[in-house]
Amino acid sequence: MTKILEKTDRTRLRRLHERGAFDRDTIEAILDAQPMCSVGYVIDGKPYVTPTFQWREGDHVYWHGSSASRAIRQSRGQEVCLTVSILDGFVMARSGLHHSANTRSVMLFGRAEPVPDDQKEARLDAFIDGLWPGRSAMLRPTNAQELKATTILSMEITEGSAKVRTGGPIDDEEDYALPIWAGVLPVTRGVGVPAPDPRNLPGVEAPDHITGFRWPD
Amino acid sequence: MTKILEKTDRTRLRRLHERGAFDRDTIEAILDAQPMCSVGYVIDGKPYVTPTFQWREGDHVYWHGSSASRAIRQSRGQEVCLTVSILDGFVMARSGLHHSANTRSVMLFGRAEPVPDDQKEARLDAFIDGLWPGRSAMLRPTNAQELKATTILSMEITEGSAKVRTGGPIDDEEDYALPIWAGVLPVTRGVGVPAPDPRNLPGVEAPDHITGFRWPD
Ligand SMILES: Cc1cc2nc3c(=O)[nH]c(=O)nc-3n(C[C@H](O)[C@H](O)[C@H](O)COP(=O)(O)OP(=O)(O)OC[C@H]3O[C@@H](n4cnc5c(N)ncnc54)[C@H](O)[C@@H]3O)c2cc1C
Ligand SMILES: Cc1cc2nc3c(=O)[nH]c(=O)nc-3n(C[C@H](O)[C@H](O)[C@H](O)COP(=O)(O)OP(=O)(O)OC[C@H]3O[C@@H](n4cnc5c(N)ncnc54)[C@H](O)[C@@H]3O)c2cc1C
Ligand code: HEM
Ligand code: HEM
Image (cartoon, rainbow over all chains, first blue to last red; front, side):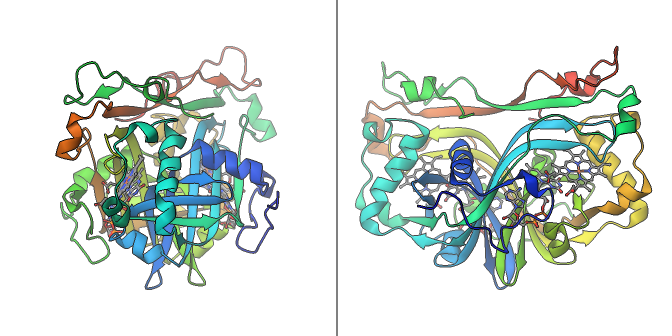
């Protein structure tokens, strides 16, 4: 597995390219920190962006949906762009222009390939256990009919880029003399108090993967 | 202004269409609650999805970037899909299949048109004040050169859809007999303690729009 993705015409950053990164460690850490993604695909020459969950195993990224979904059917075997982004903070400057945001993002490009039937169950277990360690083994097992209704698409991580911004505002030198509050307003992700289903059986307590859930840094 | 967007072949939900909504109030509330978006565009027949901030004024949605950015240049005058999504909670079921997420999302379709020069300043002020009421008036004013370097794209909200899921898991009837914890794990957004820039002038305190910032519900 190459440790650095090759830069292509698709992935060369035009602006602020010093914020770009092509090493797998950076790309994988961002994918693993944010399950939400946006999948872009083309129908009749026009763009569509569908919000979806993604998960990563090794050098592949995966997402799933109904086998009857248009988003899934039109991506299958086609070129897609899968984008993940995390907002870490608002960067407040002394002029409008220098406002920015601390963000981590990944854009991946490639062909979406369907996962074969006999591998679907393992992939979905990895999806569930990635979010909530140990949960898949506690569930009523997935049956053949359910697996048939589910399509999992995968993309090898070969072409893509990460972009990361950290730190405070960078203002024009003369603006530092102005009495304007500048700095960073950090943005956080959390979870609230778990709301048990009213039909849970008596004595069934929330497992550690629920009570101990925290977002990856 | 029509109160309900017309359903088109692009925006008709194929799956779980009862979760779809085409009324402006629902669409606008989601746009106003989530500044992050993903803009999809096509170059040489292939899809690209760029994370960006959006803001809304009336029946238009806006986003901005460098006039030299490829994402901006290739979207200008072209068909785009702008997607916004919010994760409100993980829906934990008794089988894998019935896991889901409480989400609010919007997909908008249309042509991205550049905002004329003489309207850029007002649009950027609205962007800033939308996030932080009153801030634009406190800043060093934006100058002509900065406005020239900035392109603002806009799209009229005419074709699009919202999709909303709320509530607990819906399991297969026989699975309610299983001793498995089901329910909702709410997901929250917050902000941390503001980090002042070390070069702030002595006595300059964080304004209310920083200390009182909260995410819209
Ligand atoms: C949450 C969030 C909000 C943002 N808001 C704005 C905004 O309001 N205005 C703005 O100008 N920019 C914003 N950005 C940055 C934006 O995503 C682009 O990086 C920026 O528009 C510069 O594009 P470019 O012209 O250099 O890249 P392009 O030339 O358009 O892209 C060339 C290649 O560079 C790589 N690349 C570019 N951007 C990214 C990225 N973000 N992540 C990973 N790879 C990338 C891709 O491989 C892409 O194909 C935001 C980013 C994030 C994560
Ligand atoms: C954070 C998040 C995570 C998600 N994760 C998954 C997942 O892992 N697997 C999965 O199957 N689905 C997921 N969804 C739902 C997904 O976005 C689609 O709604 C779903 O794939 C069904 O697509 P479809 O075939 O009915 O819609 P399509 O037939 O593909 O779309 C037709 C039209 O319906 C409208 N539409 C479809 N989906 C949305 C939407 N989400 N918001 C607004 N309008 C929409 C659009 O106008 C679209 O052009 C997620 C949604 C969100 C917000
Ligand atoms: C007067 C107001 C503003 C002007 C004139 C302006 C202008 C610009 C320009 C020209 C760029 C491109 C930078 C480059 O590629 O070299 C840019 C990027 C950006 N802007 Fe703004 N902006 C303004 C306000 C804001 C605000 C309020 C935010 C809020 C979060 C913001 C967030 C961003 C982000 C995240 C980028 C991307 C930076 C990167 O690529 O790393 N901008 N802006
Ligand atoms: C064995 C595991 C799983 C299977 C077999 C499965 C299967 C499916 C199928 C078939 C759909 C399409 C529903 C429809 O359009 O009618 C779907 C949608 C979805 N799944 Fe999964 N899924 C699994 C696990 C998960 C997990 C762990 C999550 C975690 C969050 C999840 C989130 C979603 C979401 C958000 C949708 C969209 C629902 C909507 O459109 O409103 N799924 N899943």
